[in-house]
Image (cartoon, rainbow, N blue to C red):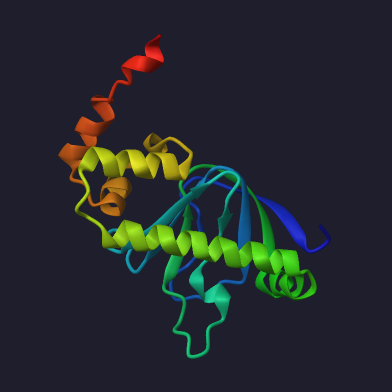
Length: 174
């Protein structure tokens, strides 16, 4: 706890900037964050994370031959986070094998999710939307429509229909 800091972020505040190396990662207590690469209006949205999750840019991994940080983190809602420097995070992983294993598992989980998200656009829109909703564990309605459309590969029209026309589970009504 001595190496962490609780900070408050305002909606639309940039946490990291594209082109600037990141120095910290963030354990999210409350709020919603987005990560994108490149230009915000046209760039690739990599992920969204909310409370009880962890946010960082890929340059944190310090891969040999790395390129400059091209990811940006933006708070989409007011947020409370626990901030931890990359240096202190590395120290924790080196000193405590459980922290290292936790982080490795996290990378594997999100790697598989990204592989599915960006590799399979053949599923039906309803199935894709519900899969993402279940995966995230928070209401997709929290994500601004223009970002969600770019992330999911759905059209604005498809998204509006999916949000309006909810599938009914008849057995759950009884």
